[in-house]
Structures are given as C-alpha cells and as structure tokens.
Image (cartoon, rainbow, N blue to C red; front, side, top):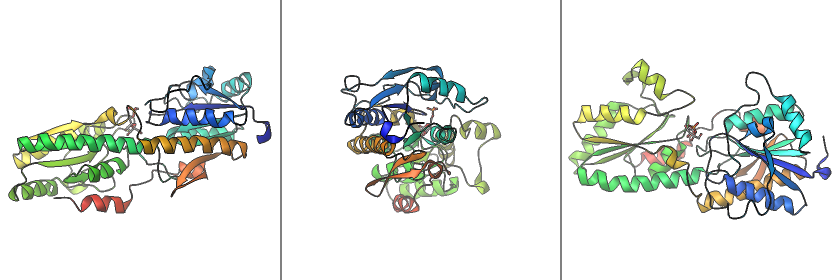
Length: 349
Ligand code: F6P
C-alpha cells in the first residue's frame, strides 16, 4: 500500500447508529484534506458501500451547509464486513477500483472492531469515535453524547412541570446501552430525584421509599431517570423471563421504564407515567460542543493518515487531540465515571 506522502485519495464511511456531529466530521475531513490537495470519497451506508462499491466524491460543494445537520449525508448501516464470510476480496476490489489510499472509519464499538480486522488485513485506515452513549474506551468523550444529554435534560425540564401539576411519578427511560453515562449526566442536568444505571443494580423497595419520603416532605411528584440497561438487584428481581429477554436483548434494548413504572404505581399507589425518549436523543442538530469535537476529530484523522498512524483512532484526552490504538478503543465498555454517578446520587430523594 502507499506511503503517507503518496496519499491522494481518502475514503470516509460512517457506521453503526447515527449520532449528531457525523456531518461535522465529514465536513472537517474534506476541508482539511483540501489543504493537501487530497480527494475525499464518501463510502455510502458504512461497510456496505465498500463491499458494494457505492462510493462517490465528497466535494466542497456537497459538504456545504451540513455542519448543523443531524444524521449523516452518506448514510450508515450496522453491516459487519466480517460476519459469516469475510468480504476482504470485495473490499480489495473496490479499494483498487476507486483508487483509495486510506480510509477513515467513523463509528462505535461494532464498527471500530471490524476496522481493526480490516486494517490487519492490509487496508490502511484510521478510526474516529462516535456514539451518543459515550462508552468507548481510549477517549474521554464521543461526539453525540453532549447533544443526547442536552435533549434529555430539556425533556426532564418539561416533564417536571407536568409531573408536578398532577402529583405524579414520571419514569424517563434514556439510551446508553450497557453504560449509564447519558442517564447520570441528564439526571444531574435535569434535576432527577433518582437515577438508575447499569453499573448499579437498583432495588424497587428503595425507589418506593424515596418516593414516599418525598411525599411526606410535601414533594408530591418524583422524576426517575432509568437507563435502558439498568437492572434490578438480584435479591429483588421482578422481571418475568419473557420481559427479561425483550428488555435486555443486545440488538434492541428498551422497555425497563414501562415495567418499572407499573411496579412503582402498584407499590406506592401514586399515579405513574412513563416517557421513553428513544431516537429523539439521536436526532437533529448537534450542540456547539459536539460540532467542535467532531470537527477536531475529523481534522485529526486526516493528520493521522498523513503521518502514517494507521490502525489507530483519533481521540480527546483532557482538552487535547491524541491518537490511540484501535485495540484500546474496543477493549470493552467504558463504564460510567463513579464520581459522576455520585454527583447524581447527592440529589436522590
Ligand atoms: O449506541 C447508540 C444507541 O443509540 C444506543 O443508545 C441504543 O441502544 C442503540 O443505539 C439503538 O440502536 P438501533 O439504531 O440499532 O435501534
């Protein structure tokens, strides 16, 4: 493959669930590459585009105006090029057909895991971390997280006023897969009375105690944030086998909020309503923080290609852009920071 000084054409793909800021990365890659007269090709719908040859130039014109736009203009998919029969021959064919010298893979754990194998099979690439869940190792933040938290915090503000008017308990289910980053951060920003995260199994009896205690103090409403993978403690387990299977299945999580809401109403006698924020957390315009982070990561990824830093991922550590081995980024879920959880916990009750 080519040495960094011979880099003329870079491909870029976005894989996995979308996250606000993807377009900011694409824009930054194109604008940074232009400074070195490098052509950028957009690979459509993640790995699928590389396998099927759906690849088109990204020009200054095509990326104009996309900075504030949610989603990704080149589409995404959860296709894994290594599942069942590895598609290296198809990738090699299109790699040569489109004259690719290196690619930038923007994705979460699944997409970046595949990247590592693709790179090990001789394709120069660098990764850019993306997920609203903020659960990737090797980087302090992923873009999309700040936007998701802001959306959830605004929803909590709105749910406060309706819960308070009706003296109700409001259970708000948020995304995050196996980590409680969104739940804890949104809970702090939105003034939640209880936050339930996967890292800390919860007890229904304790939740009801807090709600009843608040009532005694004249707080007739309560706001409970529950992460989609939060589990009851094994000594107070209350899900049926069927419920457990649907709520915690790996491909599509969700549903703990509804079940929990029913149980709380049963046990406390207080009217309880459930709101599932769902894909609203991923849609729409990115916050300024995410736009800046995504832009810096896109620029860093092109710099890494020019420096020959393949098999690595652009990342933010503290306030600095760095590169870290892809293997580190995919070495398991980055669990919620305990200090952040404790900050949320201060306001339980
Ligand atoms: O990883 C991001 C995420 O939004 C999770 O928070 C959520 O569980 C999952 O993706 C939903 O995935 P899909 O888009 O496949 O339904």
